[in-house]
Image (cartoon, rainbow, N blue to C red; front, side, top):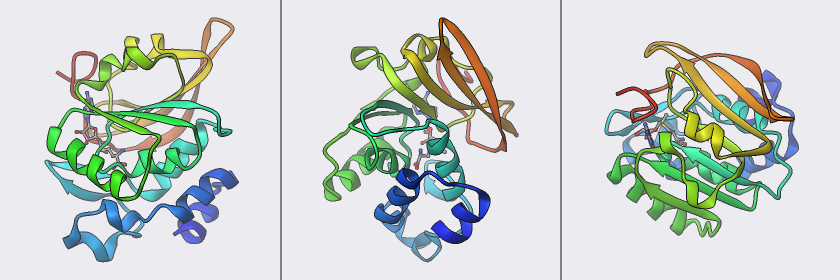
Length: 203
Ligand code: SAM
């Protein structure tokens, strides 16, 4: 997976590649999909939700340009895989999932794998998690019509936020960087995610 799907497509950050070598993706995938855990595609995880394609997880993680000391917020815990990848690199990960059964399953797997730097909350992630803000990085793993204002507010100065923006069928991965009081954007290309449902997402 690392060589054929990530390095071949230009993922270079050694911290990201190393995290992919460490996290056992098969643990986050339902048993019946087990054989396909390392395939080059997203997989269903129940409740009409998905675990993203490995390359998209890597692309979004690399875009945050992590060094190791950061506090990161993820919106859309899903299986917990993306949170585990980030937790291999940084100090603290906060992750929010709106579907309780998915959050509970992710919590159990992450505990079994002994992750101690991930906190999970059930709720509407479009409002962020104010208590632990500001965040050095925010990653939204569901598709939004626009970037939620609450997340921009909870992003630290110099922080980066990556989010798929578009309609319900196709989106672009947009990186926002808070620099000298301004938001700088960069486009990381097309993608397709399940919708971000909530007060500052899709109703
Ligand atoms: N990051 C996940 C992983 O590694 O498995 C994949 C996430 S899946 C593509 C998108 C997730 O976002 C779904 O589990 C969905 O329930 C969740 N979601 C959608 N809207 C949300 C919201 N407002 N707050 C929190 N989670 C939300």
